[in-house]
Length: 179
Image (tube, rainbow, N blue to C red; front, side, top):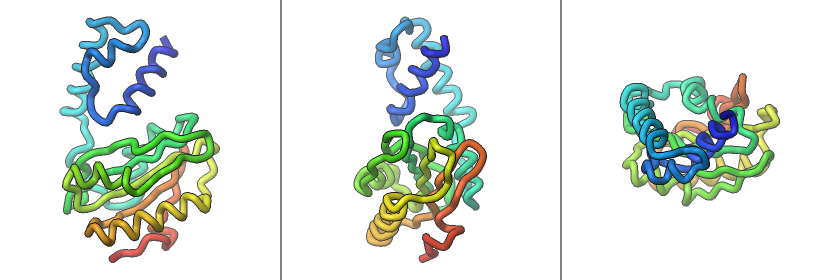
């Protein structure tokens, strides 16, 4: 059962929206009835407990929304699309990498933000090692996102690196500046 739950969790991480019941049934040991139940549960959760109307006011708010990715064995790079009031429109995994790195391109981050008609955004990624220090690659992608955001007219709120119990904010460390 634990393996099935892990398989389902990984499957959901790779899908941006609630997957079709037929796609859920592709997982081993999930038949039509179970797939329908899972699909209904995901839709109910989205409607009842979705991130919509959650407002990002500080880095801790971002951490609260992405913290459940902290226990993953690979780095997950996540974007949060925000409206003009900094309310969450969508939370998406942009890429899943290795245990100590992931490849991120601004094009992949901004594709969903533009589709969402976002006015602002945040990004976050987990460090499976638990260390919160940024790598040169982390710093480089943050700088590239900040430059691209300026060109596109999007407000880049923050980039946090997180582990299960803590996080580090680029904005709080002075690496992202208010425009």
